[in-house]
Image (cartoon, rainbow, N blue to C red; front, side, top):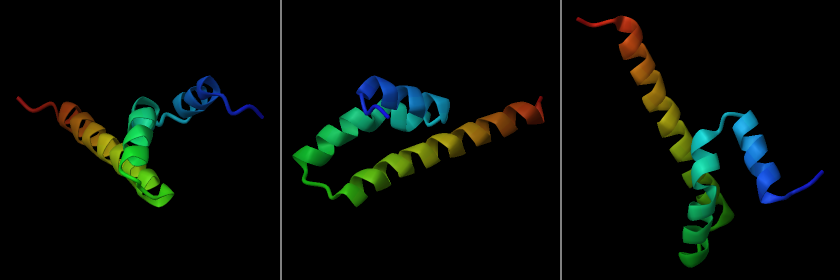
Length: 68
C-alpha cells in the first residue's frame, strides 16, 4: 500500500470525502502552526465534511421540492 499524497487524494475522491480532499493540507498546516492535537485536526476535518454534506442535503431537498 502506498501513502503518497496523490494516492490519498484518489482515495478521498473515491470515498466522496470532498471537504477533506480539498482542505486536509491547509488544515494540516494550521494544525502544525497552532499545535493542534491529532484529535483536534481530525475533528476539524470531520466537522467540515459534516457541514458540507448537511448543506448539500438541504440544497438537494429544496431543489426536489420545486417551490414556485
